[in-house]
Image (tube, rainbow, N blue to C red; front, side, top):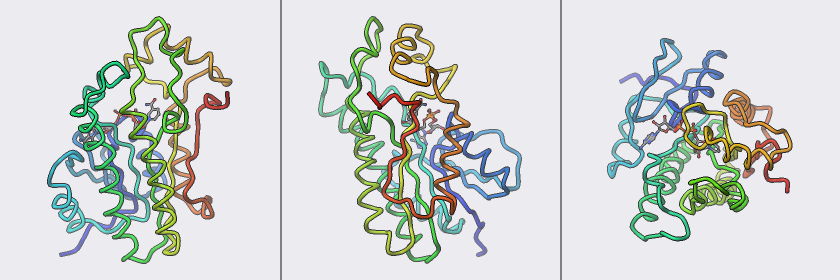
Length: 253
Ligand SMILES: NC(=O)c1ccc[n+]([C@@H]2O[C@H](COP(=O)([O-])OP(=O)(O)OC[C@H]3O[C@@H](n4cnc5c(N)ncnc54)[C@H](O)[C@@H]3O)[C@@H](O)[C@H]2O)c1
């Protein structure tokens, strides 16, 4: 059976960041396969979609199915964000093993298993490739309680563990796959402007957060998507094992 040839596979491409990334690659006529639980309206011969649940217990079987129908991509991007309800109540007052395990299992472990699966495929295909995972400023620095002052928003230890785990995985994977010309990096955006997100529409949170940002604004999804394009391209051919922080300076102080 003839496989669909794709240049890029993206996990979680139907979200805020994913949509911008897909747009960037499609404009340049790259074929991109979006694996997500939700599809987006996109009529383009360069766009492919497969319904895919990263939390499924049949992850290996589902990945095998995908590669029965699609070629190994040159670029793999993970910009997934699991159901935010699973992250509720994992602050320092309320950590329970069940909740924490669920987040680590559904998000961190799944991201690592999927990336590792694709990395082995890339290695076999012997083409120069780039894997890009999405981390966060909170994979790098602690969540500052001042940002949440006078709001009902809490720190989230589950999120920080997932993101720091991603950063560490990237370093290890880059070491293992470097000799095969496969680069593995992560991108850590600061807050991205989003009219639907409760936090970003909380005036006090916004004020507290922006106090820490020298550029005095949130990011636009488009300017973060540019970085995925850069790390995916040959312009970053000597960068691997790196976590590129794009936060308007939030983590500087
Ligand atoms: N938005 C921000 O301000 C911000 C800041 C820093 C880091 N990030 C990181 O960027 C990434 C993308 O964030 P976003 O704001 O675009 O999130 P989003 O919620 O808009 O998009 C996430 C995507 O993941 C998909 N998804 C959810 N559960 C899934 C599952 N079980 N299987 C497959 N797909 C699933 C969703 O359908 C959605 O399309 C996340 O890793 C997030 O931590 C975001």
